[in-house]
Length: 99
Image 1 (cartoon, rainbow, N blue to C red):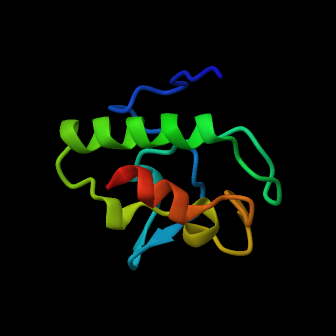
Image 2 (cartoon, one colour):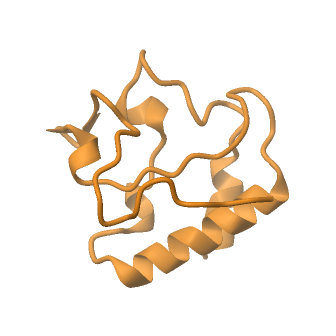
Image 3 (cartoon, rainbow, N blue to C red):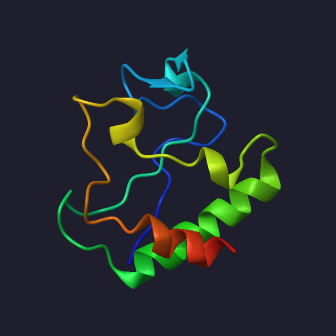
């Protein structure tokens, strides 16, 4: 399993496009986008959840304002336009690795 940064966390990425989170538009301006290899309806691998949890825990320690309750999918911030991570993503499994 490979992981790499396409855009440094300190720079703006264009992962969300037209988007809105908690009534604030343009999520690219204030968020960090994390992409996982997969499809909307297939299960993700255990190693993906484990690596994602490690990354989230590291980001929480590094950046103030990042909290687990604010983690969301592209499908939530750009409904109708974005569908990921999709039904194949187990939010409960990720949550169990973060606590």
